[in-house]
Length: 257
Image (cartoon, rainbow, N blue to C red; front, top):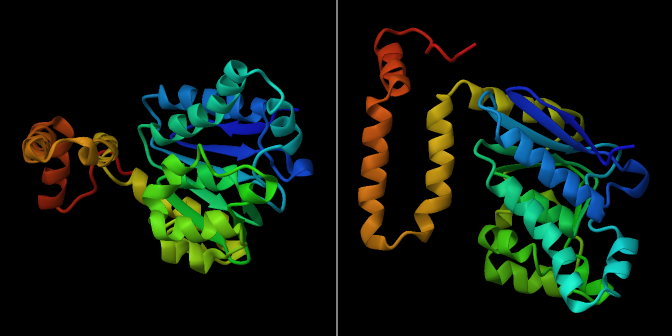
């Protein structure tokens, strides 16, 4: 049985599919996730990706048996193995369209890295979150590249080092998620947000995500030119002209279904 269920389409869906293991991620899961995001990212019709988990838990973190085996590898092989998580999170982060994650139940360790790599995170009320790595004698190392920009150093110093369990309210407060949703409304809310995204200009959305990723890394002197050039290009494009015309003519734009 595959570790993932993948449903392609303009609004694609990827579901972690190891419910018997609480969707813990093995090296196979990481490879399948990376491949799924690379394949979907190459599709021109892709507008949004929704990530979920089958069963009562979104993701219990890394598969402990895999992590234990990986700890016995020679250093160079160990680095390659550890890089699988970084490659997967990079594939999620670099997906050219918005990625929405809808998570329930336990969201531990690497599952929180996946949550942080997505653009929009929804949590079911009652979800239990934990940076649990220090309990296991390791630490949230690879995932920190995606988690720290979301929660900041102050929250990381607490939740990384205590490995305490926290809930959706705390996660929203620290910026790790955007919304806490009633468990029976989680899928509905994810679909609603995806619907909002597909009502927007496809090129505009892709460009906005690319700008949001690139802008913080640009030298301050280059930022203004970059955003001005981006606006000029979008405004004069066929999509920009259609969107502006549709607004003035009080009609839906051509991409609105």
